[in-house]
Length: 274
Image (tube, rainbow, N blue to C red; front, side, top):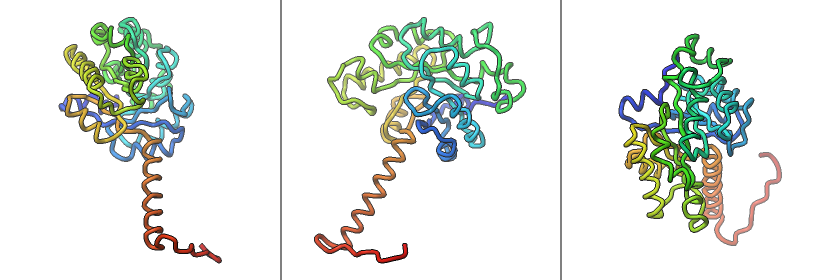
């Protein structure tokens, strides 16, 4: 059975650096997974990825050795079991608001008697090993997203759910849920009340003996979150990395060309060739 790198890093007392995929492309997935992330998550909730594409992306990333996870669209048994059968080593589920939600999530991830997952690991039995059914419950990680006022109110009961490995903070929705439109939308919160709320979720999870993950918009903020004690941090995503690199490259080009030509100098015309 494939040993989950996430659990191995946690056992060694180290945080997990997680990549994030929103683009429906096996090639993009292969490139991202090849950069050395400890885990890479395919986003089936807000990303442009469907279940069939997710399967081919898992295949493209297999050689990287990273743990491969999926954020499912919603709390639905078919969605959860489908990504696990396709070879996901972990599941992140959005909008878990009550302990009942958390218990249902765990049940979809675990085989009987611990849960209700139906046996049919179509690809997982090849990617993880013939003994997959025997060891899957002990290797797959299960994260409940905490991102609403209701979830924060029920936090102590949620983190006490047997079989739940961790909570995953979605700071954009959490900010909307706790403060409405008081602040800008997005990640990397710096408002004192939001930092306090995020760290409260972290501390509550650790007090219950489970892990905590945080979605970040930058490497700098992710590093700060590890300093707070987060066990898994997502460092931006493929869309932001692509757009940021393209923007920086073009900015450098424009600056260099304008600097060489000088302000007001005429443009040279290309009369042939490349």
